[in-house]
Image 1 (cartoon, helix red, strand yellow):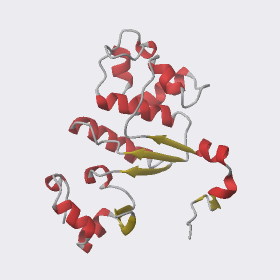
Image 2: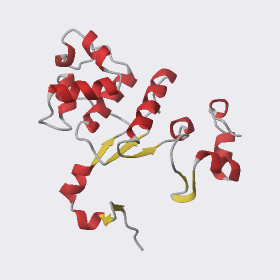
Image 3: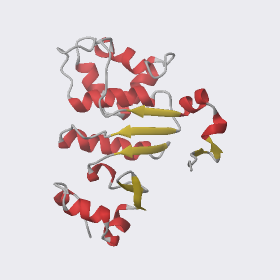
Length: 191
C-alpha cells in the first residue's frame, strides 16, 4: 500500500515531474558549492535571476555584508582560499534554493555542522521562510525544529508521534525521551 502526497489538494502524480521540480527547492546536508563566483553559485537555482534578486536574498540571509567584504564581492570565485564559514556556505546553498521562490522548501540537517551563532541564524531564516512557503526540515538537533508548527517523530522508519514541541513534551513519549537523552536538554524548554 502506497501513500500519496498532495500539494494544493492535488496529488503529485497528477502534477508532473517538471512542474513538481519548479515548486520544490532542496538543500542537502552536505552542500556542494561550485568553483565559480558566488553570484553564479546562487544563479544555479534560477539562471535568469537578476543581480537585485540575488542581493535581496543575500540580505535576507544575512550574507550581503560578508560577500561585499570579499575582494570581488559577488564575483568572488569560491575556492579553498576564500574565507567562508560553514554557516556562510550553508546560506549560499539556501540562497541558491530560494532564488526560484519555491512553494515547498526542504532542508536536510541544516544545522548539523554549525556553531551556535550560525545555527541561530539558520533557525531564524527557517522561521522567516515558513511565512512565505511550506518548510520541511529533517533534523536530529531538536533545537532546529523546536518552533515548527508540526513535528513528526520517526522510529525505525515509522511515524510514532506527530504534534507541536509543547504537546510532544507533555505526552512524555518518544520525543520527550529523545530530548531527555540529548545534549540539547539545557537549550530547550521542557515545561
